[in-house]
Image (cartoon, rainbow, N blue to C red; front, top):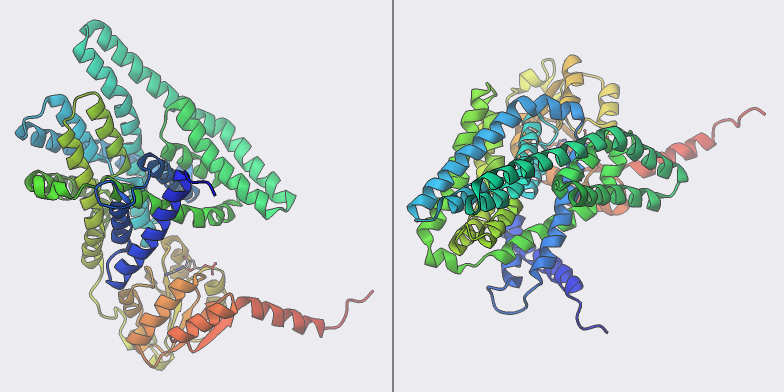
Amino acid sequence: MPHHVPLIATIVAGLVLAFIFGAIANRLRLPVLVGYLLAGVAVGPFTPGYVADQPLANQLAEIGVILLMFGVGLHFSLKDLMAVRKIAIPGAVAQILAATLMGMGMATLLGWPIGGGIVFGLALSVASTVVLLRALQERRLIETERGRIAVGWLIVEDLAMVLALVLIPAVTEALSGDSGGGLAGMAGALGLTLGKVGAFIALMLIVGRRVIPWVLHWTAHTGSRELFRLAVLAIALGVAFGSAELFGVSFALGAFFAGMIMSESELSQQAANETLPLRDAFAVLFFVSIGMLFNPMILIQHPLPVLATLAIIVVGKSIAAYLIVRAFKHATGTALTISASLAQIGEFSFILAALGTELKLLPPEGRDLILAGAILSILVNPILFRLVDRHTQKPLKPTLAPEEVAPSKSASCVVLVGYGRVGKAVTEGFKGAGLVVVEAESERLDELRARDITVVEGNAVKPEILIEAGLENATHLLVAVPNAFEAATIVEHARRINPKVRIIARAHSDAEVEFLAARGADNTIMGEREIALGMIALTKAKPRPT
Ligand code: AMP
């Protein structure tokens, strides 16, 4: 039995404790994130007992970042990216400037040198990829307009940080050495970085665009699911790593491009599904690795600076983002979602903080404040989103009165959740008035609106969305979403909202049928069984004439 296995120990301790603390947080009705962060604190160096390997935990977290950004790229096309550039570029630049100035102001008050102030401010200006993407994914916002703006914004921030990481050492050198040569050195470093980023993008768009879909198609035609999975992972990780090593761009950016190029191939949906379980596991390790950095003593030793740092991240940055988005004439809801998405900091801030202390620009206290600001802002983030949800949601009453729902016969109102393969077939076969469709992805709804079917846009796991769809007065609820956990939550809420409604749910296995029935579904249709019955029925048809 080997004794020194730090990689295994870090993965196991991280996942096991994250599960235990996450489950406790869930029981206490707190976001599971809180549990993951606390698991990190528990295996970190500032609490007694086992201490996991920090550098290893950070590397594992990077894999989470890669897979998350790859997944987002899969839902993005170059056209989507171009469509948001008009707001994302000026928005991100203005927000970085605003946050940096606030950070510099605070640094001046604390008596730090100007270089320290710049690093501190920059570290507070850049949001964490993982926190932002998870929040958007949880709310099914990635494929909405506001989600795309937030992702575009994040990419600009990411690029700005790639430049900052190169420029900060060059500027420090210029300031300390002979200024003429230093300035030339700075311009050289900037030119080289921009050239490398440009070369990377060109290579991906010209060569990657041909090679990646070809590899994927070729692998799919081998018929081996295992090889297909491997191809997806190899492309995601390979492009991310290769682009970071060769072109100096971040892992996240490399992965995003790999995903975006794959999204042009019809196999992209399948590719996305192949990476989901791994992505979720590594994203959890990201939070554990952040928790490990946190020294709770700072809350007692420097409470005021910690609060001020948190205020810059959560309040200052949010106000700046809100004003910028509103200035571009986007709706209040969009502005609020984007502000909340970006009101936190994470992985890039730590890299900047480490670089700043290494170059002796940032005092160690600055690094501790950045770490405390990160963990606290990540903890506060779900609360911010909840406030935004509350603000942007319409009042908690059915927007459709029973007579509006079904003008002729209000008793015939049926609520359908999910307008995908199943939901679409339901609407096609549905006869009668009073159908209301709940769907999370706005694009899918345009078609229904054109057909004059009442729609409610949103995630049906939220009770208020079901209420908005008129569930309180519905006779039937058809839950046509594929994920059994989500379906079960919808069924549970629906039962509470309307004890009399007949709930018909979709399942894929006997275990899911049982699970959904226990939550309150009256009938559950298992897709696979229906296919089998269809096949048996067809065996009774006449044989093909020979
Ligand atoms: P399919 O598996 O093709 O029938 O597609 C399922 C559909 O349900 C997709 O259009 C999803 O966007 C939608 N969907 C999945 N989960 C939810 C949810 N929680 N709330 C609303 N719509 C959902």
